Amino acid sequence: MAIIRFENYVWKYTQTEVPALKGINLEIEEGTFVGIIGPNGAGKTTLAYSINGLIPSQYYGVRKGHVYVMGKEVEEYRSEDLTEIVGVVFSDPEAQFTAMTVEDEVVFGMENIGLSVDEIRERLAWVVPLTKIGPLMDKPPYEVSGGQKARVALASVLAMTPKVLVLDEPTSMLDPISRKLVFEVLAQLKQEQHSTIVVIEHNLENLVPLADRMVLLYEGEVALVDDTERFFGQMDVLLKCDVFPPGAIHLFYKLLESGYYQGKLPLTLDEAAARLRALMDNGRKQ
Image 1 (tube, rainbow, N blue to C red):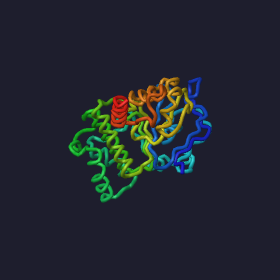
Image 2: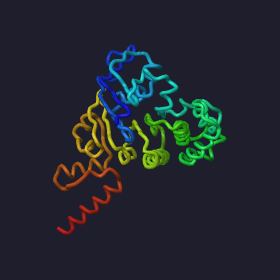
Image 3: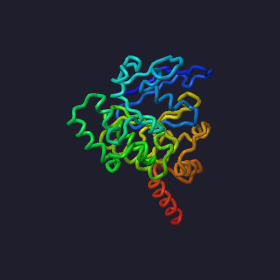
Image 4: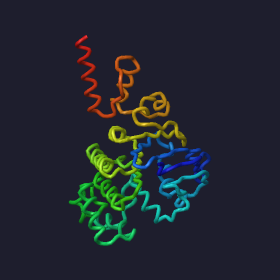
């Protein structure tokens, strides 16, 4: 079942000549992990904001077509009801901070949706260790490190247990270690909660192993959508749209193209290393 559906969706910001999104038709199935990629200006953030209702409620522009969440048009939701269904983590975590301590920040959203004290305690007991923010609870969210801010923002959204989690370039300002920690949380969510997760991301090494499906946006249109392995098998489309896949995938695509390798494209470094060793062993035997 499609939990999110775009039908001939167009959005053009006021004072721009060209629409940011042009005739988008896209379905996201419940319980899937979807990666959305594309060059700058492709319309990725506009797509994200159209799912949670920030567009059109907070932006001026012309909207055509439809966006459905759980079978209901986004414009028909009250904003507070849609917030409970779709949680968004922004690329700049500070943009969503409102409280003076990390604990208050995480609790704030839960209080807004009317949870009892016992329910709030129960969710804190789950989300704090999941996101590893226990030592930060008494600190101001603005004063912790970039990676810690990202995890605080993620914890604040997760605590409200939305059915859909949308992350707009959550690791764009993070170092590799902090980036890895964020994706470890997402991996645990995928495995244990079977959440519907939509991640917009430029750094593909951590995204690709988790994604069930990938979407490529280019110049406001869906240029490609497919299961992750088949998606990267269409390398000519990706390169034409200025998207460069992880090095391991690109290497094996070239080996496949040249006839030196037969099989599936590896989606992780461990898979690539194992298959490369197997290729080398076969070469020695011959």
